[in-house]
Length: 165
Image (cartoon, rainbow, N blue to C red; front, side, top):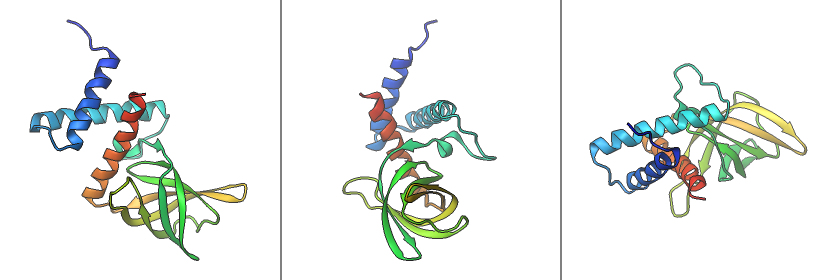
């Protein structure tokens, strides 16, 4: 029995991903795609040396380094920033002044041209002071299933783009 080369597995995943985005998967293929997404996320979480929280799946923990426009409602009003990394569980961004840990704020995250931004609430989980700024790390609160799926597709789009280079 032959073994599947990693490059062939990745090429197959990339094809499935593109077809899934277009809504062109049969039910059995969708099951295969979601399983492959879990497998890839698990490998990336291991490579990123992340620890899963109780009940968290690799797809929820997997982080993608990506600068994306985000607006957050802080005490001084809405501010614009760029994310440093994004996951299905949350994001981090550089801001000039951060609210305290535990604060809840509204957000709008632009995930692509021509797409409606994701919006909702964030909970600040940590603040890392840096020169003249702060890295705000926050978790998403109650993302709708639609927003979660759109965000997951964007994250895997980013992973697939790296494979295609």
